[in-house]
Image: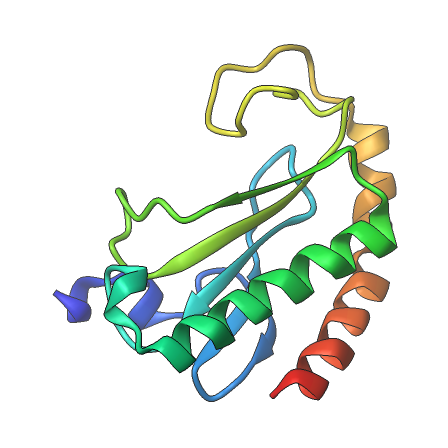
Length: 143
């Protein structure tokens, strides 16, 4: 199963930071420029597959990603999700949401509520290098 897993065969997006146990990537999801994933490096399907210290580390990294997105981008909301229905490899979605995004307040996987605003999306995208620098700095301190 792991051999066919897209998260075992590659980073799963733009690699922002890699640690021994997990990594943070920026997903390239159209319309959602600040869509990140915390991906466990080893192939496990469920959060409960991790040991207690591993679960703590995973949630600490999810928390750092959330905190940096909030501090750097001031989104209206952060969405957290660990579904794994399509890719059964443990990963957390950490998504900065804005009142102007095409799907807000619905989930990013729901039907759009309005047209996308490329100018506002571009403004967020321009800030991502600073976001990712802050992420690396905080994550390097953590592990």
